[in-house]
Length: 139
Length: 135
Length: 150
Image 1: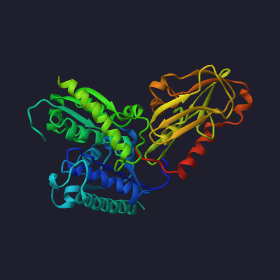
Image 2: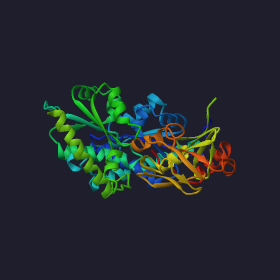
Image 3: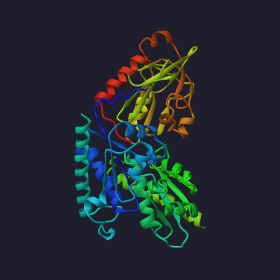
């Protein structure tokens, strides 16, 4: 089957780690990139579906530059991408960007407080930079 | 991760990132594990489970599991079963929608009022099942 | 050889079943002797979202061309489907009432909607498109629209 992507796009595969606030931050940051920062340049790949054998997700990640966004150092999105599709174009870990673990008491994992939202925006900006980088190298 | 020896039901949402029902699966799970059945339920990261994290694997194998899926592809259910979890039952967000047709959740990143409502309704339903499982 | 024409847009595969005819609003039609079987295309199921409710005209009733045949409700939208034929509705896929997800999971197979005995089959077929033509139309729609990601 011939793939016919009409425009160059970058895949983003994010953890949504329910156990940590950093998982929620990953999720929110990815959604911000998809919906606001780079809406026409990105495609989100659903990690649960990817793990469950989703062919479309895995083929996209294999054939197009894909950025992984993880909340913690277990890096589930990165590990899964490497296992099933190949090396990601780049990998972002929320904790690395903040330089420290966010104390769960400072923000609920369920509803991000202002500080955590600010982190999410920062992560989103970083993802957007990586998207631009991937597209530039593609051309 | 919680190492309490009290019997618990593990509730695993799909948290699908692209659809509103994925967000609702996540929110319903939080409502359950942080509010309605705080002492008797726990969640864990689906991705961590699939990546082979030993602690996660032991948790799902040694406790009853309920999955909450946002779409017919049922990724949470599939992955928990593949991991050898003690799968008890699954809930589908679309069934909550079918029973509450007046609710029209629209936003994915941050749930709107209808999305929150649907998550609450779903969580209440799951809570009853949790009680049954622990009886 | 695949029974479908296929293309990929974003990450999604879109399939058009060969040998079927299509309407401009994304219904497929399969001729079975003097009857036709109808369903929705892969493009329509994908862009509409996960089906939660479906209402279909009654078995045994008659339908006029362009009249509403069925209504599908998803979390995203409500889609009204209009009949490309005048005729009698012979069968309705009752399974869809309990399992509307079949529309999404198997739109060309188990997700069929109705069979109709058309009053004027030959004439009405002329207004439909061959699979290859619909494939081109679908591709144009994809290029001009934006898909919600999964």
